[in-house]
Amino acid sequence: MNDINFNSPDPINSIPKSEPLRPICKKNDDPNGVLKLFLMVFSVFLVILSFSIIYNLVSKTQGAGDIVTNEQAGNITVNASATIYVTPNEASVNIGIETTGVSMEEVSLENERKAGNIINKAQAEGVLAEDIKVIEYSIEPQYQKQTTGVDLNQYPEGKVIISFYKIKEVIQIKMPIEKVESVIASALDASATTISDLTFSVKDRDGYVEIARAEAILKAKEKAQKIANDLNVKLSNLISYSDNDYTPVYSESISSSLESTGLNEITVNAYVTYSIK
Image (cartoon, rainbow, N blue to C red; front, side):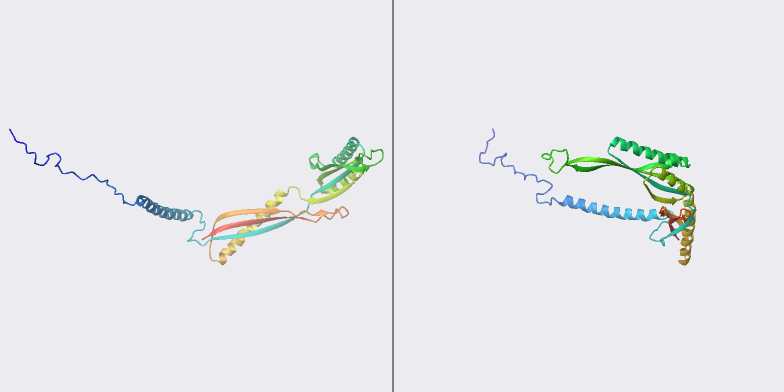
């Protein structure tokens, strides 16, 4: 029988205790380290992206119709105008009617009768229906204060009533220039009260505009070529073109001679840009 020595160390409790496991990341590590690393990588990416964009922009300008690049001389932009003078062949005049009366219905009917007569006489002179239009029409009640037969206790300053009505109408008529005198005379015979805004213009002016445009473009080309020669460069591709045209409208007083209408001018301005090489 084995003797047990109670004075010997406890075989269980005498096992040396191991130290507790420590986490891989120390508590005192910098928590912003990952963020700093991310920002650094992102900054490098932005720099690379910027250089890539700049390179692509420069590359696209090269070989695309000689548009300006940092290695090329640039552009030449010129403008030129051309004016042609055309004898007017069309006239326009405004015929005014004014009708008054105490009854709105009667005034309206009378004004309609006058307008119909003016239009019928103009068509009898050879004016087309589509060249006649009403450009103004107004009804103006005229008021006054009535003191007789009115309760002055209720209306101490008089009662406001409509005394009569006034209708104004303006008819615009376009016609061949040789018809002006006869159309105006027939309108006055048909109770027209005003004749105004007599103007002379060119019918079918688009054809004349094309002639002026072609001349303006030719002048612009010659001007650009001269500048290129003076600069010792050559014109390359056409980059842009635009133009505009206008015709001053001249009005004549009715009392002036209708036989001397002058000439209408049609002007076209052309704007041209060429690249150079």
